[in-house]
Amino acid sequence: MQIAFSKYHALGNDYIVINPKDLTASLTTEQVKTICHRNFGAGSDGILLGPLPSTVAKCALKIYNPDGSLAEKSGNGLRIFSRYLWDTKFVGNDEFAIQTDGGIVRSTVFDGGKMVRVEMGKVSFDSEKIPVTGAQREVINEKISVGGREFTYCAATIGNPHCVLPLPEISAKIAHEFGPLLEVHTNFPRKTNVQFLKVIDRANIQIEIWERGAGYTLASGSSSSAAASVAHKLGLVDRNISVHSPGGIIKIEIRDGFDILMTGSVTRVMEGLISPEIFSVDLG
Image (tube, rainbow, N blue to C red; front, side, top):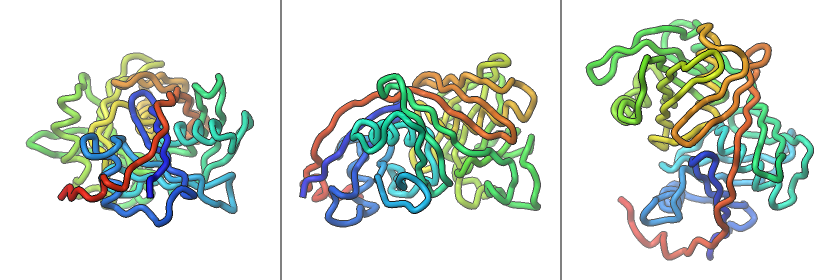
């Protein structure tokens, strides 16, 4: 059976949305990998499966990484999914709730669908919540060594784990070199997303991103939330921050208790049908 899909990107971070009503069986790990593959499939940074039923929100969402693993939360994914719900008239212009494995978020679509605002929830630096190994503590300005280099890092969670490394200069090269090593470091029992952070001024930061289960990424809403929160926690920025990534700018507002409001664009790319023939190829 062919699988209907919609594709969107949020600042170059692209996702395929599949409505579960269009599936005859659950997606397997191998199917997710194939669909996301840039050469053998439709190509994306992940799959958003929904709307799924929920008793506590308008609907629920499952987020798949391109390696087939599940992500608890994705800021860009949530903006894209919100736009999909708006496009399909499942929601209107009023705020609505989405249940994720990383908690319930509230979303509003505006500007004719081109912009989405998401209440991402609260950031925590608590080692048990993230999680990070060792005694319970706030993980701020600790040392970590990978690839023959020592970094100072902070860890945070907004429903999924993040390792933020403040540096005077950052690049895609450093993200590619050290991101994969930090992702699987033994400090992080559930692996981690990684952000290399440069503070520009009190209202602007720049990040390079290595995503758990996805790799180098042009933009990320949860990464922007975590990096902005770390910069604010360190006293380097104020509460309203523009997060610059290779894909563009995400606006983060840090409210009381590190409650995060994220605003960013979404672009509709295409709709189509995935042929079952692609699953006959063994990607190994």
